[in-house]
Amino acid sequence: MAPTKTTTKTPANVSTLELLLNEAVEAYQEMIALRQKLRRLKRGSEAYLDLLPEIAVCASVITAKTDVIIEEIDRIEDTLPDDGD
Image (cartoon, rainbow, N blue to C red):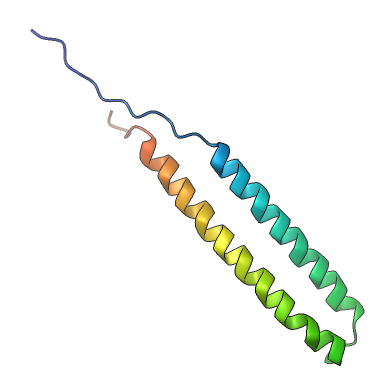
């Protein structure tokens, strides 16, 4: 009987994931700083309202980075062997 060829998937390099996570943490830290700045301002003041677009941009960055992290995790999971293998 000829030996059977087994196909094994090479585990993905998680360096990219770790880099993406670091970038996301930086974005979250920026949001924390913006929240602290917002808390020091009078609610509804011009300075308070002027900060809202910056918060919106930061939230968009966080959303984009989170989406990329999820895609990278999916890519890593796709490289893992199936449970039945």
